[in-house]
Length: 312
Length: 308
Image (tube, rainbow over all chains, first blue to last red; front, top):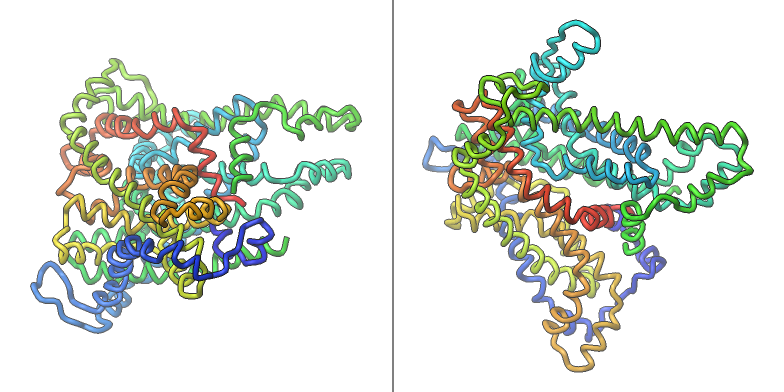
């Protein structure tokens, strides 16, 4: 996905993609009015609300007043001084990084495990894709039930070690965010797996043959040949996992709803909660913070990952 | 793109022996390596099945047995079998209590027009964006695809819909989804149009076809593979969306995820895991069945765009 974003002209030509001179013919053959319906929808329902974000974050818009007045930086100051702004920002970042790591480790491990084309592996690939097509909210409820202190996970651990276990997986102010990130990674690992499998397929068999003739072990081959050649798949998977989970809501809402003690309160959970309380301006302010966070991180993340690809 | 699509399809469809596994059986391999590979062929299926049982089997088993229990047994969801299977009784209960039929049609009501809308508008825009090049259009393209990563302004969109008189209506929800997912369609389709030789259009143009005619008769049919991929992705997003639906139509329109949220968070059902899980099974079935029928196409479609 991201790999085409910055496709240079040279690269495009190298791939056999035709270039077009902007001739007068091209102008009447491809009239600009074809753009208009899409642009109208984008501007009205995507860009204008985004611009509104920058306006209403500086107002006292709420369900308790009929008028809307400008209040300057008041919302930012109060959210900052109460610690909620930095808190939610930090939780969102930690969550996104954890999800990106877990989802890619699981996805890559599954891809390597199920790499060989056997009927069993093909069936299991399909099975691991089922969580991807399920509702994230449903996944959250399933794991809420599994992770209860008297839930299935503890009873399985208990039967293995031979004594009762009652870990409150969703009740720790330190570790619950890790558990929830693992659930998020569980839901999406099938997608990462498929993309890594597709990446592994594109690696030239002759290179691997040469490495094997040189006596390289499986691990050496993986570390110095296959993993570097997977760079485009890594770019796509890391970027989508990182940026997608910053916009996460469903799984956390269904498992912890932001608790315990707000330690899993992502920006979107905060936005939903304050919106429900009628504090629209506060919710808008956090929405703006989320927008800026993603905007600021998206371009460096994609550029850094793409640079790694170029080195190859 | 076509190359990758072929290779990903090969992952799913091609049987046992690719060139690499054929080489593995060559006789000039050192003795120890041969034995290790042989061992790997026995260990790999065992590890794979164990992983699947642990990671998928346990959660799915929990869902099925809990959804088959009565309220008292399901109070504390565990992996034991129900004393009495009542899966279909529970289905019947959530079907009426969870208003599944209105929710199903509510979900369809917002999903179908949104998907058709983004496909048509996105394909039209992408065709022009791919075929013409100027600095201004490059900026338009960059802005048009920025929605892939940038999060929608979910609070102020509610305000905007109120001002437009669309708050809480299916039309408002459709417009919001279209604004969110047009970027994805424009991105996928523009990349695809660039791989279509312009000579195909020229032939029709020489015969005097108008741009609309060229687009409808030449370009749209060629776009079918990429439009299918986009359809799958966007259906998946919209069918499962609860976050944006809560803001835009929460309480005004039934959709499957919204009703699941209500069933699970209302005090009445707080401990009713058998009903929550019965609901989850029923709401997952439409996508699950579609996926089972078309899994090869879906998998190759989704991976096709990702790795170049």
